[in-house]
Amino acid sequence: METLFVTGGAGFIGANFVLDWIRETGGRVVTLDQLTYAGNRHNLDDVADDPRHVFIHGDIRDRALVDATFARYRPDAVVHFAAESHVDRSIHGPAAFIETNVVGTFTLLEAARAYWMGCGASERARFRFLHVSTDEVYGSLGAHEPPFTERSPYAPNSPYAASKAASDHWVRAYHHTYGLPTVTTNCSNNFGPYQFPEKLIPLVICNGLKGEALPVYGDGQNVRDWLYVGDHCEALRVVLERGRVGETYNIGGDCERSNLAVVHTVCALLDELRPHAAIGDRRALVRFVSDRPGHDRRYAIDAGKIRAELGWRPRETFEGAMKKTVAWYLAHEDWVAGVISGEYRDWVERHYQRERAGL
Ligand code: NAD
Ligand code: DAU
Image (cartoon, rainbow, N blue to C red; front, side):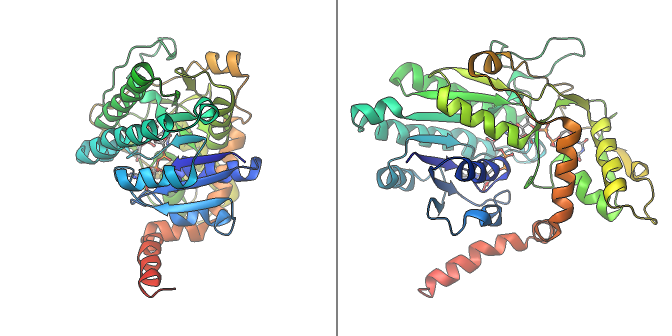
């Protein structure tokens, strides 16, 4: 039975990945997550009672804890999602991005290297360190430039992108210098269930439901390449199974949309699925607000390498996946309410109260 050591598994993509992995494979997952504001223990409720899932509350910078996790569970692979992930937060408080994305990745690499060096020959040959990264490391594209390939030069523009670029370089160096069997993926914008409503799509869903303003930065013509999170999770499984060691793979939806077009799509779906006479046409809720400093104009991914080498391509269409996503948020208003009120964070306090009481 294969065991994965997943960091950041209580966040958006990490939780989708853990739930998919447990559902789709016979494997076991050990999740390590610090439960920052972006981590929500309830995202993993579906596997709370599954003996194949272990949850550890902790920080990837805690070397002793990471070492102990390797030693106890002897994973076949690390899937590294844990990160500070929001560009706007990185503009207001970049230090946390150095801490988790750079120092945290370094700590994890050091612990993985020590563990891997101590493994027997067959464990060593099987082991993988999958680093989950972003297309933002490549910077911004002009309107007519071709999409990013794995050979595009790094040109990170935000503190978030710079911290992810640094982590990619550390991963690369650990492969080249020490032979650690790493693989890096650089993915475009994800959407789907469990995404924290600070990001564009869940923010627009949550505000639109209540009839509140929909803030669109600048002229709304910035372009992102959207991918349904389930397709990303499948791509990661394929890379774990068949990806070549030391390589990087770009993952994208081949689905470029302007932000305004995305917001209008969400509005139309909300109007269809949850019409509200007093709110009316939700497109009227759009408000153009000050632009994000240093706002990248366009991202687009050429996913030709993963398609040709590993046979992966997205299954979902943008429209179909967006309808599923809006429907998920409508069906999980408790989750949304818990996130907005901050109630989800009480898990940590309740958990440690129980532990202190010896329950
Ligand atoms: P997220 O912000 O939703 O989740 C991050 C998770 O990491 C949270 O559960 C948080 O508690 C945990 N975490 C943060 N700091 C930690 C620490 N020091 N120790 C342990 N856990 C910690 O992020 P996401 O959107 O799910 O992104 C996951 C990964 O995928 C990130 O590395 C991100 O850079 C990358 N990525 C995201 C997207 C996207 O569109 N969301 C696209 C490409 C790549
Ligand atoms: O490209 C991959 C990246 O996608 C990931 O690496 C990041 O972790 C993830 O957060 C995401 O970054 P973006 O900055 O592209 O995502 P965000 O949802 O914050 O914004 C999407 C676009 O929408 C961007 O052009 C900014 C704009 N925007 C965002 C918000 C929150 C708005 O116009 N209004 C908003 O309120």
